[in-house]
Length: 161
Image 1 (tube, one colour):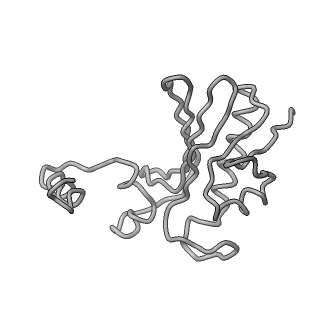
Image 2 (cartoon, rainbow, N blue to C red; image 1 turned 60 degrees about the horizontal axis):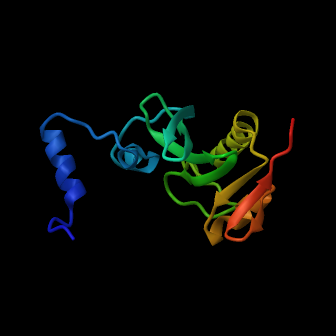
């Protein structure tokens, strides 16, 4: 391992001294920006598509005009097989079924990202199902949105429109 246990902080400090600002995902997270005193706006949907080895990725997110990242979803499509590799809503963790003023979680962003990607997988890539790589603790959330457990994945059949 490295000798500098606080490498991220060291790099951020050097960047600030050089007048630079990090624009990585972690530095753009809603919770980090709130903590650091940034102005935060209203999130809206964004999309970035790119080719990867053996497939295509669709990166969906909710960001504000300052590029603050409220949530993201990574879709991987390979040979009409669609898989959500990551779905994350940033900020303070909020217990399932609860709402906290100013929190990004439980405001409908995750469901909006999933509904959007279901349409993309079906209409743009011809996928008949969407698989989600999900932790055990999130399975009830996916069940509430029509997904069922198949092996290690939560899976939803995508109906033709």
